[in-house]
Image (cartoon, each protein chain N blue to C red):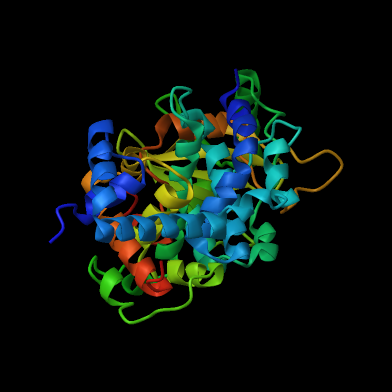
Length: 251
Length: 162
C-alpha cells in the first residue's frame, strides 16, 4: 500500500505542491523504491511530451499566420460567416478553399459618425433597405428579408445581402451582422426587436483601392465591430443555433 | 490605445506557443495551423474584450481551446470523441508501443477531448492547474483527476519502461 496517491504524486511532479508537501515526498523518495519509480515514469512522460511538441517552437511560423498579425493597414479580420459553421462546412485541412468565403473590406475608411449618418441617408435613397420607426432605423425590403431568412451556414452566393455572425446580445435580443455585396458596399448590425430588425449601426464598407470587392478575406468596419463587442454575450451562434433561432422567429 | 493593435502586437511573439498548443490539440500540422488561423481571427475580432490585466497567453489559449471544441462539435463526431471519463483509461489497456515521439502523438490522438486538452495545457504548455481550471471553466479537482487519467492512458500506450 502506498500512502502517496496519484493526484498528489502528479502534483509533485508538476510542481504544484507547496514546499512542505514537496519536502515530504522528497524524503519519502529516498527509501521508497516504488514511489521513486512512479515519479520517474511521470517525469519521463513529461519529458517525452516536451520532446514531441517543443520542436514546434523552432519551426518557422507560416507566413500567412504571421501576416494576419503584421497587417500594416488597420483593417480587422473577422469572419463573414460564423466560425463554427465555417469550419463545419470545410473542416480543417481545407485551408486553400477557405478564402472564397471571406470578404475583404478595409475598415479604416470609415469611423466618423458623420460618415455613418451619410451612409444611412444613402441607403434610404438607394434601395428602400432602411425605414424609420419612432426615430429609429429599421431594416426594410430585401435587407429585412435577408435578415429574416438568410443563414450564414447556407449562404446564397447570388443574394445581394450576406449574413455574417449571429449572436444573442446582453439585452436578450438576437443580433446579426450583414454586408451588402452590391455597391455601395455596406455593412451593419441588426438586432431583432418587436418592431423588426433595428439597425444600431450602418457603415460603409468601401472597396479596396483599385479593385473590386474581393472575396479574399473578411472584415467588418470598426464601427460594426465595436457594436458587436458592446453587445455580444457568450459566443456567436454555430450553424445549428442559427437555424434554430430562425425557426423560432429570432426570439 | 487601440486594443486591437495591442493584441495584435502581443500575439506575434505568442505564435510559436499557439502553434505548439494547436499541434497538441489537433494533431496534424495542417489541422493545427488551420486552428491557429481561426484563433487569430477570433482573437482580433474580440480584441476589445481583452483586458490588459489578463495574461494574453491564457486569454488566447482559451480562445484556441474553445475553437478546437467548436471544431469537434462541428464535425459532428462529438458522440464518438467525447468518451466517458473512465474510457480514457480502459480503452488502451494492453497497448504497449515503444516510447517514441510518433507514438506519443498517436497516443494523444486517442485521448478523449477532455483529457487531451488538459495534457496540452498543463504538460505541453506548462500552465498551472489553476490557470488550466480557469481556462477550461472547471474546478481544479477536475483538472487533476482528468490529468491523472490522461497520464495513465498515455503511460499505458507508451509502455512501462524505466
